Image (cartoon, rainbow, N blue to C red):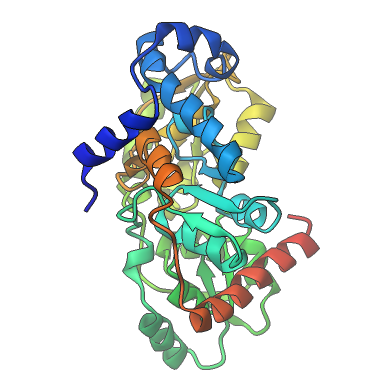
Length: 349
């Protein structure tokens, strides 16, 4: 359990973290990426942390990999690379750095460590888990194998290292259909997201069987809610993530991964858009697309929001919360993740 009073005391001894309108003004080049969604008084609070983190990254030869669900001050202020799970996984193999700070949830940090075992991987908050990853174990994978002998296991990257190690290949929401279609045999096991699996099954000629896990953010959306919203605002374009239920996906104008959603919004620039995914997605692209009005509702991931500037600064300062994985598990998990990356590259994804 983190002792925040002790952390703040130590950080204050090494860094000037007092709110500073003057420093904030001097960092306008960073603030301009988020000034539509972050008010000036908040930026004056964030700016000292952003400066301290960016300075410390240089000293540590560190990079920060930020998921698309990070809040704007992290996404725009300190992240060196941003993207969805696949993009971050691939970037972890490419960065020339000694230290990776994972601005995301724990399974993402594990994936970075699996792919770059020689690097130090820091997790700002070890309690930043994932309801989906926690819904299945390696034993669950073996249970599915026993039910469907010979069927390959495609596991979402939103899983623990142990589950990845027990699987044949991983996938993300951006490549799940292509990965499934590339598998041998008529039946494919998908774990752990039942709704991603159902949405893939609706597009694939394969028989897709699945584990009954789901994401606490995306499972909350309903088709009835979307129909009601569209009725009240016919001009809105609804863009959904494939972790939503199939009936929600059926109501959407576009469905895709977080990177796919970003690409679609940039390409089409609708006058009004509702992103049926995690709240920070709209905030992170609002300044890039001032012509788009982002409509509510949205759902917030409580795990992603455990990552803060203060915690990022703390792990870079203290070098605590290093992610370690049993080498035998990591070797097997690496095969599953690397197969995904290699196949994605082969398919041009």
